[in-house]
Image (tube, rainbow, N blue to C red; front, side):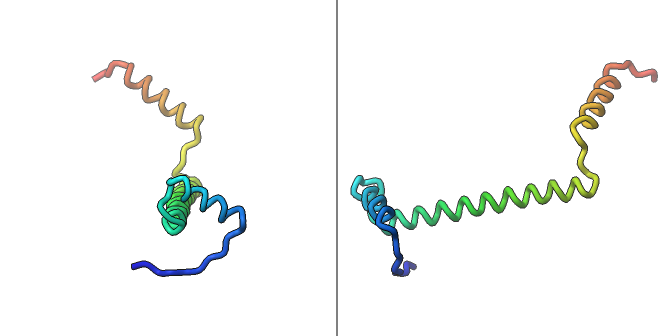
Length: 89
């Protein structure tokens, strides 16, 4: 389904949009604006996903489930040393 709406553009925006259509990059002003809205939606969804991931990391950090770099490296060195040591079984 499509809906017709009226929009207002600045003179620069209109000139730029018409130039893109005239160059053949888009078949019409409508197609150009639809593409622009699709790009804005994708960017917004990506930003929302990134913010959600960051909030999750912050929540994990606050809950104490996060290991800082120094602790992680120390634990890795300990595990490597244990693997290199022959078992006394």
